[in-house]
Image (cartoon, rainbow, N blue to C red; front, side):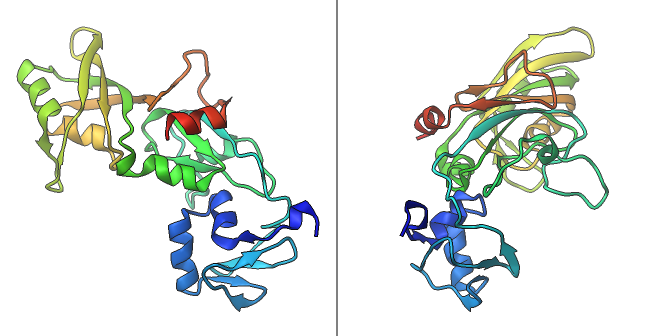
Length: 247
């Protein structure tokens, strides 16, 4: 048996390819959503390059051939107008269209930005790492540059950094909010938080009657958005160093 054909656990291979975390894939196995050679997979089964895999009725081409020994992470500068899904029925551009092509792997987004937000998104071929970086227990800080319409009074600053109640009844806050510049009706601020709830930055500020008219993610953990990276372009990062940073 060649080195490439050494059996690997099914959930490990699929997690490496970005289909989900090992725990998610184990749930799919238990639910009968994964077939190996036409038969229902079982927990703990191992596969080689000769096995045929189906996930949710879809054949996975070359799932086990040349199992990648090298994972990757890239930083993408998302422009306004792109959505963070692999395809869109409305035909809108997606972030995945601009990423480098892969063989036997796929890119997994570490968090999302809505269509009206721009800036830093991390993508990795390591599905387990992606899920770890997005999990609340990771306690990873995100930083955004925000252009606001409205006046941030000392009282508003106090409220958004100590906690406000969002429209769904949950509490949220910024870990920090710093004035950056601007005058008149529109001013720039940097805000940080340790969660990635849907539109959370905008929703926190809207509780105080403030309108966000630009939102740019500029940092995710230790990774900062390079000032010289154009929108719509990506930059390769050191996978091993970042994995250690986010350990």
